[in-house]
Image (tube, rainbow over all chains, first blue to last red; front, side, top):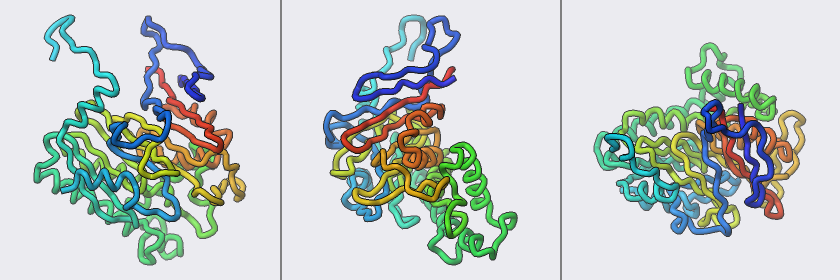
Length: 76
Length: 272
């Protein structure tokens, strides 16, 4: 059974499937967490970001990317 | 440590867990493979151990070997020889055969939306190769005692031994020093598929024509980097059908961002 909460603009707009019941018969587990939207694009530092995901664009400049700065911060 | 009823500490909030993780020792190594930087991050007391550095070197050597075998840009790679008909699959190295089988599975599970055989130049697993190599590198680091992350080209595979999460930011395409969302991941993979700012199309392998440009990018969290890769790619092709499709993929979460600030996010729950 899969239950999905669809969140749009911060509002849960759709929940399909059965809700979790306290008697333990069906318990929802989210294998992965719901992403949190920043209210505006925030710096990685202020959001305590450990790693960064991004698309690979055709003109990729690693040195300008956030992950590069994070890699540098922890390299010997 | 709880020794009896009522002595367990309350669980940390997400932000407390992330703050606790930030106090752990942490070290990163960076090497260049598959025409992109690969970084390994180790968090915990083992970060500075010599054995850890050795394990990282071994894991990245595995990535180099995978590149030699699977690069479509190397004329002598097993993949290139396979594409030219000079090598047959039963005689191919184990890595290539494994990637082939995973591509079959991806085509099946996405109903052909991700299809490594739909291209003019023949079998092209490039969408999956990076995720596969990320997951393999993480496995190669299984004996490192601590939290481990392997990152390459914007995708990543992580595990948490401490139970504390890796907070993964989703980069803002308009400003690559900022993030517009984040997700806390303990065990799994994260991949982001996107179109360039102007004009690039994502081709729908089912039709050979461009997919509707509903989303400018899709970030997927899944149990592995390979499947995060597969579903992030699929989401761009599926366009308006992506939210409903990904809602049915247990064990995923993620966020899609489209034109005009349209955002969709989800976390598919699985009955326990």
